[in-house]
Amino acid sequence: MESKDLTGIERQLVLQYLIDGNVPVTVTPIESKRDDEKIKPLSSAVFPVALKAEQITVSDKGIILLKNPPQAVTRFAGKHVRVEFYFNRVGLFFTTEMRSSKSGLALIIPDTIRRIEDIAIKHDYDFFASVFYSCSNKSVVNFDCVPCEGYELFSRPVWSAISLENQRTAKTYLEAFVAEAKKEKNAGNGLQLISICRYLSEKTGALEAFSGGVKPLDILYVDHERIVFGSCNENFSLMHGAEYALKMSFALKTGPIAVREVVATCVPTKVYRSAEETRACADCTYTSLQEEDRRFMYEKATKQLFV
Image 1 (cartoon, rainbow, N blue to C red):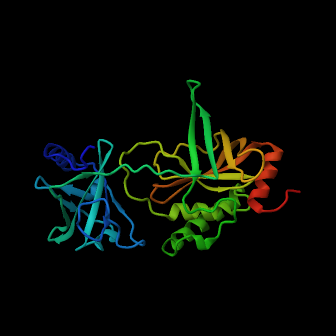
Image 2 (image 1 turned 45 degrees about the vertical axis):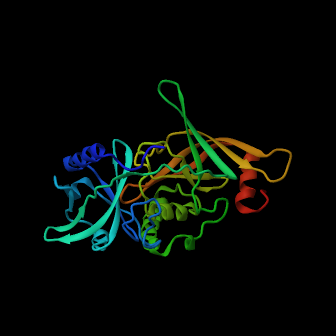
Image 3 (image 1 turned 180 degrees about the vertical axis):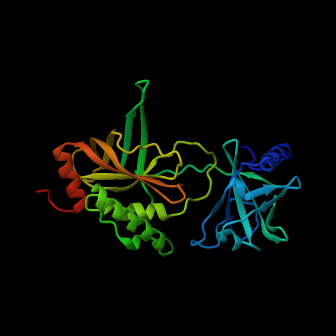
């Protein structure tokens, strides 16, 4: 098995890469400086903070100086932190102490820099979907879509599902989106906006083992009229007004078949983005859906008979 620690030569290449600049990093406070994979944040209310390349300078002595860091980072002074970044699309991290100096906050790059472990997570979903579209060369591209963790699909979204620390931000989004929806008349009954505001107000987690990988889209909301997808990928692929083929798969607990597949087409009527543009949501309405499938989805979402 390949060692997670970089060799001396690899570390020197990474250090020079950091010195040359244009390297955004993510900083998270941790319990201790133990250089292992079991490091956990201080509390669930503490989130990673992303620093842009122009906010950091790295000296040839391996010291990272922070320029005009956000207030969230200044609170990390005196604490141990985990610093993550990408080098040639490979996720790397090290742990160190956030120190205060005459020049401001500083991080000393330690001797040990490690690779972020790629963890395979298996899921067993009762519902999932695939989105398809045709390219100019006539090839067909598809995206896998899975329920977003912690989101209750086929039920009425509730404001209390949004964590308390995010509700203020979510409310700001909601007020803006409701005002837009009244003008554009494209949000239906607007229930999906709660899930959209919840998603956009959440913080993006730690870096993964590799950048640029194709991740499934998150499914945030679904009923007989619309489906909402979310993504933490800055290169969000679903475009406003474009039509996509859609296949939805429902696991059935009773009946002669185990899975019911519903084929439809949909169009993103609105694409929402977070203020930092690190998250995006596509609110899609169906442009074609068989009536028996619409009835099935209505009854599943509302727990009522379709009439």
